[in-house]
Image 1: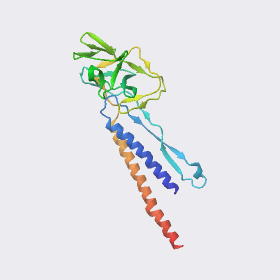
Image 2: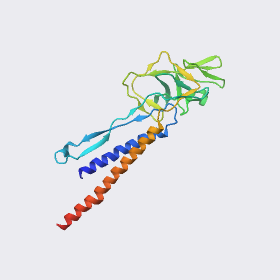
Image 3: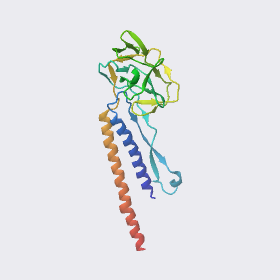
Amino acid sequence: MAGGYYTALSGMRARMEQLERLSSDIANASTPGYKAERGATEQADRPSFDAVLKSAVDVVSTESRTDFRPGSLTTTNGPLDVSIEGQGFLAVQTAYGTRYTRNGHFVRGAGGVLTTDEGDAVLGVDGPITIGQGLIEIDSDGTVREGQTAVGQLRLVDFAPGTRLERDGGSRFFTSAEPQAIERPSFASGTLEQSNVSMVERVAELSEVSRNYQTLLKGVQILMNDIDRGAITELGRK
């Protein structure tokens, strides 16, 4: 296979991965607490071909990084809505273990357990928090009250610098690293942290990646339809 094929096809593969990342960001642009993904590409030389064909160079996607910059806060006045002020993550219990999120849109789940809108039990400092049917308020330190009675306190944690958090769908993340409790948690009740995805930026990037993909596809078609056909024609005459 000619070196031009390697370059074009590897570039198309990298653009396909970029399109998947962008589509996920755009689909979650309205998900509270969602964090955008940042990706890049790099040159990947092919040593076994380099001696005979200098154009045999691939393009590959490098490791994507999550943009953990906070999103803007929107006032909802919902009694079970809360946003984190500053750093940190809320801990939630899933069927696959503890996960971490900045999505503070809570609901009253089965049996009165406080859950996220994805159905994950919200963990307090003493485990899952159970609430009744009364008026619920969340204090600035994360204390959950039903009327005048404290029924739990939200568990807010953070991780050591450099800790790698893997996305687990939507606004949830997981890691094998040990979380560190934040001693003085700060919350804003009746608000939600919005996604930090910039739709203008993402649509512009989507258009650029799509154009690049179409250009590479056209290049592959030219190689297949013109160069190969010409080579076969010339060989047939000999």
